[in-house]
Structure formats: C-alpha cells, structure tokens
Image (cartoon, rainbow, N blue to C red; front, side, top):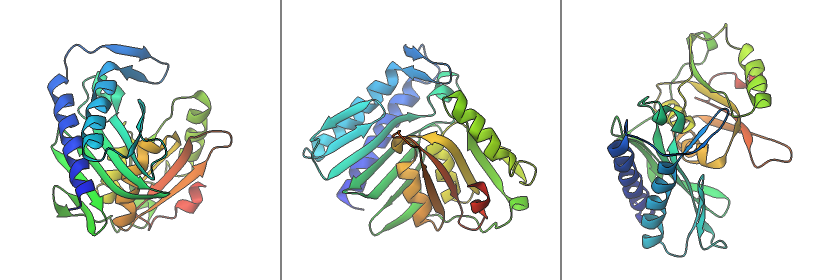
Length: 249
C-alpha cells in the first residue's frame, strides 16, 4: 500500500461510516432538482474527506462534487464524490458509495470506492492491483451482447436522457439483462470485479467515474470518454474490453 492509497482508504471508510450512521434518518435537503437531489450530508461527507486528505497531504488540491479546496496549483489533485448515488440514499435504497481518486498531473494514479452498506472496498494504486476487500479482481470474460449484463445511467437533463435512450436502443433487445442501479462509481466497480459487463451514460462529471475508470482499466477492461462540446461533462462507455462497444458510439 502507498501512503496515498492508505489515506484515501481511511477517508472513504470514515465518510462511509458517517453515511451509514445517518442512513434512513431525517435528512436535510439543500436542493431538490428535476432529476437530482442535493443533501446537506453530501457537504458534510466531503468536508470530512477533505480534512483527512489535506491533514495528511497539505499541499494537495481537492476537486469534489461539493466544491474545491486546498492548493489550487498543486500537481496532486484528489477527485471526490462524497455520496455517489445520493437519490438512492435519500429514498432508502442501500446502493451508494464514496468515491476518491488521486490525479497526479494528467494521470489518475489511485482509486478507492467504498460501499458502506455491504462493507465492500475497491482499491487500486501504483504497484497495487485492483482489489475488493483485499482480494484481486478481474473483469468478466463475456464477449457477446447476448451474454452480457449491463448497467445504464440516465443523466440530469432531458437532452441527455433522450440521447441515452437512443444509445440504449442499439443493444436493449440483444443483452441478457439490463440493470439501472443509480451509482456510476459502483457500476464501474462491478465491471472491474466481473459482476457486470458494461456501463454507459450520456453526461457525467469526473468525480463520478475517476476511481472507477482506473479500477476497470487495471482490471483488464476499457473506458471511453465522449467529450461534450462546451461542457466539462462527458459521456462514458465502459466495458470488460471484450464486448463490441464500438457499436455504441
């Protein structure tokens, strides 16, 4: 384990404990949007993660869903989603996680995804292959759509939803099963460990997928980002590397 990975694991576990403590309690809603919910607990979770990361690495920067912190010019940038699956969390659906990645310059080097309800921790770093609770993981070997179980995400705008539906129609009748699970990071972790075979979504942010992208790539799969003109968001198509995902582009 590297010290960076140790720090990320500590932060993810402590934030996960916070989420577990308040699960199915009265929650303060900061903003109720058409296709999303913002909770005060999102901010509390990120603040906790930020304190742990910057206490150990004070010269680093934080880029999170709930804002930025630290040394803005640092080459070391932590990419944080304090609750990936906030809508699930709000409605008492036990499928959400904490996602933390470290980017050094332009390269994502470390990734941690923690599911506090199942106590499953996915981790990867330099010299540390992708693991789930310390055991090595690998993508599935299913190479045909007819064998595949995929997950999809429908994003937060009507345009993105329409685009996602159109992309989904290309494979909807060909796959074995589709699951819409509500957490991009966990969907990607599930691809990395072979539970799922592909995930796509039309509009995501870096903190949604940074840790999952590294997990999939190091576990033998592939991740394709689709830039969105004039936006910091992008589409994503990720898979076990065997499915013919070029058909989805």
